[in-house]
Image (cartoon, helix red, strand yellow):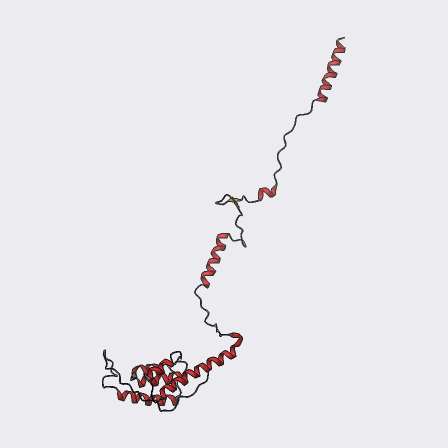
Length: 217
């Protein structure tokens, strides 16, 4: 009888072990290498995530910005003087002819005023016609401008302008005659370097000499 009870107890223990599940084993969460290597996004002023600054060719964003600023500063203030601007480039030939004709008309008006028998403020009128002519690069314009100043009695000013003009020998000879005539009309102290020279003496007579050498541009 005792042996029977012992056998029954052993069978009951075995059955209980078979029914009871084994204890659960806690597993560690898997860590993704890709997520751990990704940079942490920073939040901006509005709470939004901003992308991390990218590196360009091994340089940080700070040095990239410095390089851009240095390149901009080097190019600032440089003027390309080799630029040649052509008005109306699609019609360059017609524009050149129009400008040349306008110059010829201006010179003709100045000569007409210089030779006319009666003109109010003759030599001021000649200078007015020549206001847009660059005498330093235009020998004809320089010639008529010098004649006007000589006839106005402004000998010193005419001599200074003549030094900056490129004139052919023939025109220079005619201007030398104008210089001598204008100087002979001035008072003794008019050509002296003094603080208050006497007023110049003008020659209102029309120009009767030969025209200057013709140049086409």
